[in-house]
Length: 227
Ligand SMILES: C[S@@+](CC[C@H](N)C(=O)[O-])C[C@H]1O[C@@H](n2cnc3c(N)ncnc32)[C@H](O)[C@@H]1O
Image (cartoon, rainbow, N blue to C red; front, side, top):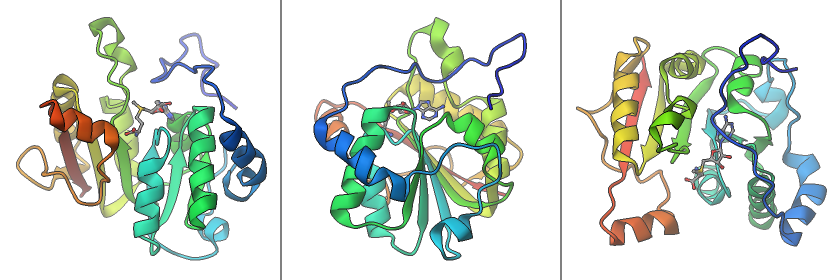
């Protein structure tokens, strides 16, 4: 099912690239996929049935190649993680790491996160949401593709339990400013600090970010809580 059946198709935050799937990723998709992948379906997910336990549930949207998600999940076996990503090589790369690390607290949905949020995740069901380095769509005419906009932030906030957090990070200053303005304007959310948060230890430092820091690029973290 898609929500794009109306006269005005929704503008998506991604463009599906063909992207080469490496042999290790292909093997992981075929062999490990069945254990960790959940099919997209327009029905609310029963987390307890999926993970076989009741634990705090954290959603990561757009995990890329999944290094960060695998590391966070390994560091926090007490939490369950749902990763949502559209890019097949990235899904394969995450599955490969889940297999290598023997992680059991991660599941993956390969689908548009907006539809997953709308149709698979119940209101107030999440303890946290991570969105790290969402595509910046830096050309002005592409800004409408940016994920962090008022309707989506309102949807994200509705899926958080009271007191749960949303953590965003970006290395684009004008997107950081947009994030801060949109989250600040969302009545269901409250900032945990005055404006940008110091980088929480819970967000793994990637090679990409280390290189950016060496080159003097900025990174902005935002951590808000559901009221
Ligand atoms: C710039 S990458 C960042 C990846 C990773 N978080 C990192 O920090 O390296 C953004 C990712 O978000 C994914 N993405 C964008 N829009 C999405 C959506 N609506 N649903 C699921 N994934 C999405 C893209 O496929 C891409 O892999």
